[in-house]
Amino acid sequence: MSKKVLFVITSHDKLGNTGEKTGFWTEELAAPYYALADKGVEIALASPKGGQPPIDPKSEDPSSQTDATRRMDSDEELQDKLKNTNKLSEVKSQDFDAVFYPGGHGPLWDLAEDKVSQQLIVDFYSSDKPIAFVCHAPGVLKDVKIDGEYLVNGKNVTGFTNTEEEAVQLTDVVPFLVEDMLKKNGGVYSKIEDWSPYAVVDGRLVTGQNPASSEKVAEELLKLI
Image (cartoon, rainbow, N blue to C red; front, side, top):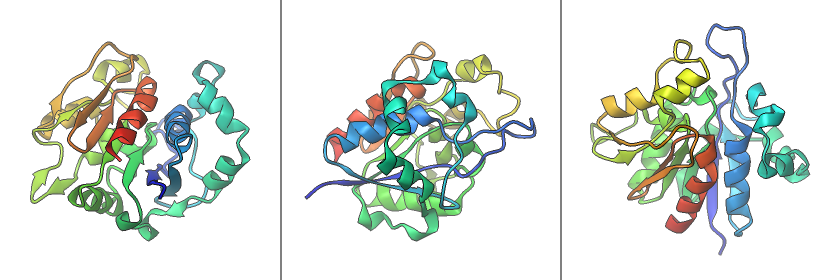
């Protein structure tokens, strides 16, 4: 029987009060999607509002394109899935073997505060199912607690670094810095050189540092399911 993974994508499209747009980062959805789908994993997409989630316009720059994003652009089946993402409140952890959160700046605003998302992560984790997050997506763990303790407390984690955030000049725009939050909540945070692929596995929690780490995260997730 094929494994099923739920991808949870941001519905948030405003980059703070800059007047610019944000959303999910295409590479961080495309690369893991194909890394899993090509191995026979069934993937469902969900977002807080349902329907088409916003794409971070910067992730569509020619410089940000990869084989996976080009494949996604011409993949009608995936485009159709994206237009019709499930509403997050209508998906259940018991229907899936794992959950994966792609990054982009959007999740820092909506998914980090979303009670439905927080409960969903707890449900997956408490049922011994893997949970995976890449780049800014570890930010959605900000208020996730299990038995009163932060989920990341004492766990080996990574996520978008403060210096990577500085490099994209959004340190003062984002609601919080992923690296600082993970440390503050007791995470054992590690990182390697900015923009290099890096994924950390601690039990059934998988985190990736940046867009370049998205495929690595998917590969680690595949091993766990």
